[in-house]
Length: 509
Ligand code: XMP
Image (cartoon, rainbow, N blue to C red; front, top):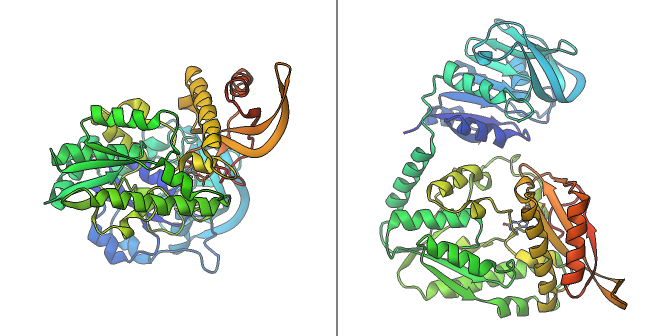
């Protein structure tokens, strides 16, 4: 069994990043809510505990806290930002409202610490806090201070450590070394979380769970379901796995064929269900985005159910659920979960009488990609931009019709192609086209046209909870706009969306 580090989540925006960074340096990590009972922590036998950041002040009336018992467990503890302030507060030091400090800062290391071994004496770090530590608890010493104002930036006492800055973000360039030092030099990690180990663990789990009958899985062409299918098929062997690809008619240009080709070449048995007409009929006259999503979700379930019932001996339903969907904490989900009804295979498990197989429940997307790489799934598939379950239907504002699908699909094809040609596709997180139900006048040749508008959107983001719009090169935008207006009949104008998330979401519906 592999070693693990536990991160107690106090609602920080970077908690998942801490977990990912720890895994990246070879130690399995799990996120638990801050108020998990101590017994549960002990039963998991962690080699290290990390107290995450959080948005509160330790003096707030209902500030999240932990029992003092955790300091008696003799497990190395690292408090990050709020986590450090909490350590100070609980052990008798003092935290005070300070000057808000947000962004890049420099710290000087003022005394030796295993945490900062092999670092320079001055490092750039990322700060994001209001309160600051002004008096240390008994036995603690300061190991780093900020250059600008001499604020306490790191403290320690025995195997309890605190850093005011965020080692988990890339703006702290030596952050990953700090986490590595904490895990290897302090917590004596073995580094047993490797991709080989992950695949072995998951394969054993699958074999243990799937003992008889077949497994089915809804395939979308996305990373998670593709890797799920390829792995399950490989582990279970011949005739035990079948992938179902529902062609909703809302996929990208040529996508159904491409997905089928890719999966077939990877040896995955696949059944394609053509439900294009059924989806389009169900959406006739529907304009409200939420209604659209609900109808698509419901139709998907019916189509999938009917297809699944035609296959004999099915006992399990596999899903590519990832760790971020599973984490029980209140904070980590973020508000986006409730802004839109996200229907991938929305509600499938509840409506079907199959046992669930979710091999990636404990994994992050980058880990699933690594498994995909091991399984020889082409990069193009592993690194494609996310695409919503309801597909192009939620990129058509107003009614979804065959004709309007054609416009958005063609425009999307041009946009993505040009991004790939200029090597920008992999540098941005997501690009999309939206068809706006507004007509505008244009001239093509000598002819007046009066047609709909396409909006281009390109964003960069780490977690899709917040996102910045991309400042794409003018030449590229120019070319894409020209091509769309010239080549996509029924589009008279192209605009570029320059709204960040928040306040706007990434998709328009
Ligand atoms: P929003 O529009 O909420 O999107 O900012 C955040 C990310 O989620 C994707 N998205 C979906 N993904 N099913 C999905 O699997 C959906 O129904 C869905 N709706 C939005 C969106 O493309 C973006 O990457």
